[in-house]
Length: 550
Image 1 (cartoon, rainbow, N blue to C red):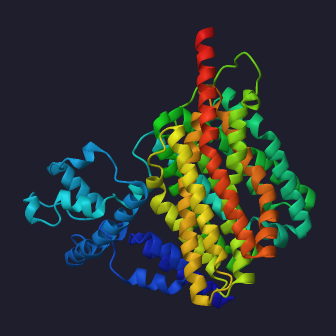
Image 2: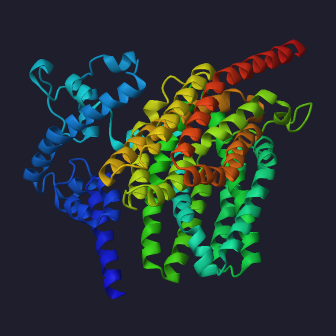
Image 3: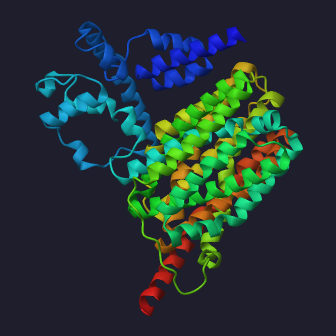
């Protein structure tokens, strides 16, 4: 035990040093493969990292120069290759301001941001590090600006969501094991309690969204996450089935209320044409903090002691507390007064309900990597068991790197519906790739699994970008809370039956099951443009009637 604790402490220390040196992905991946942490901790820091700011610069100018030279020699070509792939997937941005030459002050700020020292102006045609050549070579700014949107309400929304998802990622990974090993539930009791809690959340989703519209989304979000703090901390004292069921059920209701309110906040604070882009930033940022939370949970699970589990629960509660308090820094959104007609108008909006059902079926593709593929790897392929974790890591890295680019061209429901179609087509292609791994050798199976995961990730981010725009634009502004709550229900219903059906198809019928899933996703995606066009016509007709009545 002492040796294990020393190894965990050493890995944590190396991970902290690596992150302070600005090597984010090296630090995260190294938690799973410690030798990588040794490399990251011993090699030079990136020139604009906290480590370089503290230990290089004036103290060690030779190391600062070497770090800058290494940044230009390795990082710039790598960023150039990354941008070429991004533009191949989503096209080159059409921003006239980005095409004009930078003035001297902009050049200096840009060089600081990507980690190079400011230099005096020189002829761009004779300088490989000139503003034009440098922006062409890197194509994107620092890690922070790739994950966070520009300063403003959207950045605060993203940051708050990152704090929340840190706790979410930690709790998702340990919830089941904590309930069985620490609370003392049997697997059947755990399944029953989670099923009851999920059913309560599902039935309450629309009323909780309506509450966000009437009470104001900022108020509901703040109080929901403040309530989640003692509810989550109470899990430390829970013993037995009934207390666990009550706490997790109320916890689920509070979390869904906060999630619906957050979606309504985005609708209120972000212009219509920018929502998909901001949601892409949020999703990329959330994947980073979810990964950090999952890494922390891995250390807790490896330790296996009660105090570690309880510390993780308290840390999750503190993340929810910070989320609630940070919500106070957002500008308030006035509540929407009640209007004439049915309180839950979304239940009469058949085009939106049809879209919710269709998209709820499409979004089940996330379960392919979480549940189906790990079982497929160990039962039908010669690939090693750790390939499941490697595939999830590839998926997370791909989402962080390309989600914001994949959101381009989804500014209106029509283009967004075609993006959903493209995403569904990629998921269908990934299913066909996975089907070929069953009779392959170990090396071939590993290559095909990674290839399928990349195609699946491309479909995932393209479908997500399209769905965000459709879900927001088909909903009236005065009822975004209940409409987003209804939209969330579609995914919940789909995920209730999908694990059993997918497992039966793929594990029970092999490659044939993958082919059936590929055909199903292709058909669902093909139906999306016509369905969304109907919803747009219905929304326009409703707006005309409202204008005529006024």
